[in-house]
Length: 481
Ligand SMILES: *[C@@H]1O[C@H](CO)[C@@H](O)[C@H](O)[C@H]1NC(C)=O
Ligand SMILES: *[C@@H]1O[C@H](CO)[C@@H](O)[C@H](O)[C@H]1NC(C)=O
Ligand SMILES: *[C@@H]1O[C@H](CO)[C@@H](O)[C@H](O)[C@H]1NC(C)=O
Ligand SMILES: *[C@@H]1O[C@H](CO)[C@@H](O)[C@H](O)[C@H]1NC(C)=O
Ligand SMILES: *[C@@H]1O[C@H](CO)[C@@H](O)[C@H](O)[C@H]1NC(C)=O
Ligand SMILES: *[C@@H]1O[C@H](CO)[C@@H](O)[C@H](O)[C@H]1NC(C)=O
Image (cartoon, rainbow, N blue to C red; front, side, top):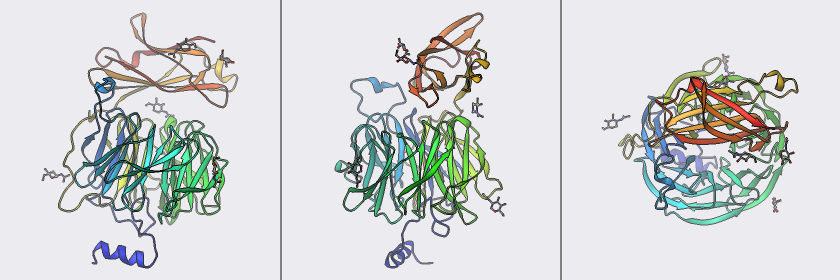
């Protein structure tokens, strides 16, 4: 067998794309091997979990700083806060991690999990990817109207691309010549010439102004932009540079991904509110996908997902269970075949082929931060003492609160996702002990949705909960209106 570098040279001399990382076209990506790694960005434990896909072993975590509400409110704290997005270099030798709260871009060597560079960038560094030179990282900094370009090897911001509306994520075409950016304040996709570092076209008319995540297919012909706030996905034909249509995927639609199954391009979308990954077939980029069915998650709020390079597996991180599901795409229908415990509140997930060499198994510099080896506690509350007919009569579903509890440093984090809330109403989650209610947290509907209801996506409280209260005795009440 020829060395891999010779294949790469042959491919380049033929003018073909050297892209063999996942998602990859059939025959391009290598089979799952012990040198591959999966990484998750764990927001609350502030870690990156490293998994060996061939065995399912959770090798450990890379710590970016303290657990949530450790010393990170201390004025002397200088480490990263909020491990969130992840990307990788095409050669599989580097990964990039985005700390969304401290605006930190950390580049790590996959071989030994060591830090190569750390850079401070513009506000809300969310998701990023390496340019095909395996060096420059293009960062969606969604607090501003430009993309920051970081030198991943030496560190530091070395350029900007104006991209109006809070660029959230950057992905590259398989040939590396074109970049695409979605936004959280504009229903448009920027088409960027990589060599010129300039927007050359805007694809407008996406289904919502807010698109946090998106993915390009391995043939480079289509891009699906997820709209979390309205539960839709814009399907974009990149050759025609037009929006083909919008899929109604469901509340809290998170990420999209692609895999070729049975010779046909399939799209996969994680829908957090219903704990499932929806599967679609899209043979032609110019036509709307066909819905095939949902793959039930083993846990709560599926978020990041990525296939193996050989298109046989799909890996999904369950944000509110602190687990990763392994889905067998060759099963009929595809289903979860394995679940492992990872760090807390997983956001992004990436699959890197050939991340480590045979000489090393890539376990250096890994620790155990965030690995509690028990899933977070979850409970879906409906509002106490309000007949649900009150809501269903006017067509809107009843208010609910998804409560998640996890241990942090010294205290526990209690998180609530409020859904279908009445605007201008204050809700309280309380613990019921005997006949009294002990209020734990108040919240209001902060994000309006289309039908006159509101959502409270990120309610947080820190208290001693585990061993003091019982999640099955929580109650949600409201006042106001
Ligand atoms: C893209 O849209 C931005 C914001 O409206 C505008 O400033 C820019 O000129 C547009 N670029 C192209 C190539 O149309
Ligand atoms: C999602 O998971 C939560 C927690 O287990 C559960 O209460 C809820 O009913 C699930 N949602 C759906 C639509 O199955
Ligand atoms: C792929 O083809 C096999 C054999 O016809 C079938 O059982 C399976 O359901 C197909 N998978 C998908 C995802 O369509
Ligand atoms: C990695 O290498 C160490 C030391 O040789 C060994 O203890 C460990 O089991 C190896 N891990 C894997 C996943 O192969
Ligand atoms: C909520 O309160 C604001 C400010 O008082 C008011 O403008 C708005 O109409 C209220 N909305 C609802 C749904 O009551
Ligand atoms: C909810 O809104 C009311 C009215 O504006 C305000 O007084 C209260 O502080 C808000 N509560 C929270 C938890 O933000």
